[in-house]
Amino acid sequence: FEMIRGEKIVCRHATPFAHLPIPSTISSIFVATLSTVMADNYCTPDVAGNIYDEYVEGINCPVYAGFFGVMGATAAMVFSSLGAAYGTAKSGTGIANMAVMHPELIMKSIIPVVMAGIIAIYGLVVSVLIGGGMSDPTKYTLFKGFLDLGAGLSVGISGLAAGYAIGIVGDSGVRGTGQQPKLFVGMILILIFAEVLGLYGLIVALILQTKGTAMSCHAKPINPCCANGGYSDDAGVCSGAAN
Image (cartoon, rainbow, N blue to C red; front, side):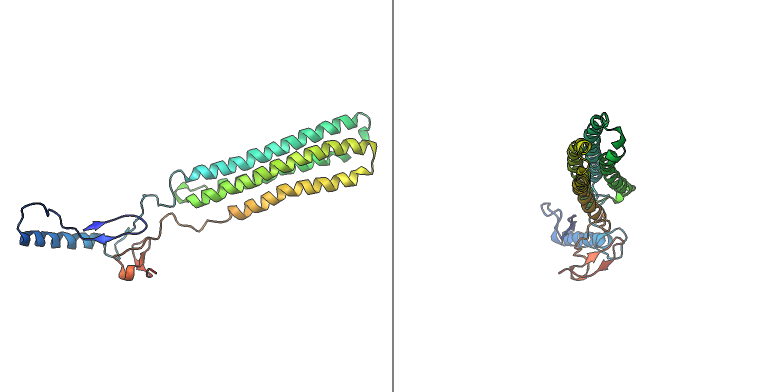
């Protein structure tokens, strides 16, 4: 009697010691006894732990699954911070140059710096959510790791692009506002459209991060020892039937 482990299993009987010069009657009795014993141990539907996963931790929860989640959280924080840093530095340079001639416009022109700083908050929020979902590594599936990696890259790279746009617009905008105050409203509108690029990434990241939480670490295998080729649950109880 042989049991093949994996998502799909096959129960098949083999004839051991067929190559040895043993009388056929003794061999038949031995094979029948061995098959009965092994069937009782492996094919009884109500035996606890009658699960056929390839790994102890479950085929959907390999030990390297957490790597993708960690990289997702890192990407969200790093890329969004790079965008926020560039936007702050570039806008701050323009504000400093403009304030030499028009110091009364400093607080009015600080808006690009504030909007650039918000980009980093987007990455922080996603990083915290991803990290909070990795509290139990034994239940962290590979599919969830892929989702978290995609969420981190989504908000991170979107934040990098938004911060770059805010920095360029803020630098040129505050310099121009110092010479022509009517340019202020147009600068704010351009900054808003640059900011929403990071917001789009945040929305997609939140959607991805909330998916895949209901997946089990253990596969749902077809157990041929169950009636009609049904499935066995975590307790080894047969339920359902194979299609």
